[in-house]
Image (cartoon, rainbow, N blue to C red; front, side, top):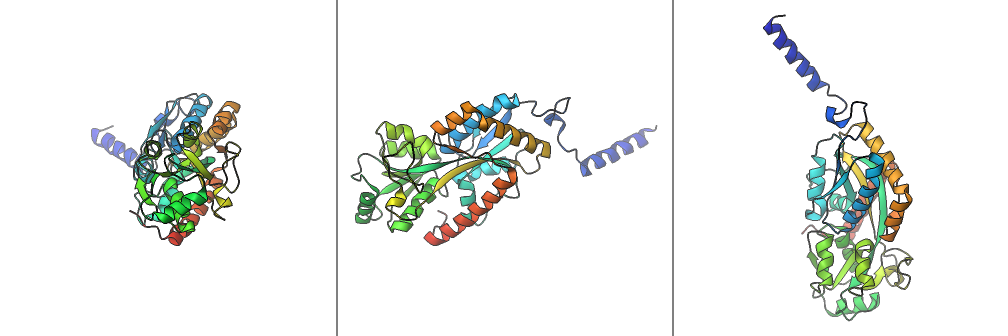
Length: 330
């Protein structure tokens, strides 16, 4: 064969390979077609110590023995979860980068007119992992011992009382704004770069109010470093039986947090199937379930299409809520 024909044949083969890519990169699978064959990166778009981070680390620990590979949590906080989501959306779709989507992301979809990613077109849903409640807490120095007293205090000091959030568009932000709108008070929003710093701020007394995820706030509540006034679920929680639901004072108030597992949209179908089965198996493990419940999470472990449908409901819900309270991006 002439050198000319050999080069031409190589070029044609290259064009064919480009036009018709393999189902998955070669490094995705082992010699026997197994997946995964190396550690998996799990991107969490929030800070270490935040509610999604706590959940992700419990799930990662449960997934590792099921997959036979390490699952490494990587925190990419900032912009209310938008930075981590964009990084995950642009990651190689080889099955070795997964994404923990959480409450912030449908809120951001409803809140921001333009984002550098799309939670529907850039990701393949795997499963909804768990949900949890928020707890309305105040710093012990604040002279409010009930939701009713907090409302009265905020009405007496319009624009003076501060509340922490994990960032504009975060669940902790919208939970507070939903409360403000329903009771017609104005508290000053102080946004931090993630749930960890937001929680640290109220524990230190830098802010007065915070809607803390129960998983991260409970140690400080038990240690009397934060005073709980109400939970965001319609009914009281078993872990905090003496703390009333906010809805007992503010009728109709409800706000919960959740997180799910996603892959970049071009990930091979085998990856989604393997990860779905692995996640459901891990979430059903008694030790993993015990850790979830101890942190205040309620296991879900549903199908990929269930997560996709739930996300659309969430975006619609937050679009209506954001319009009702007149929230604008800061």
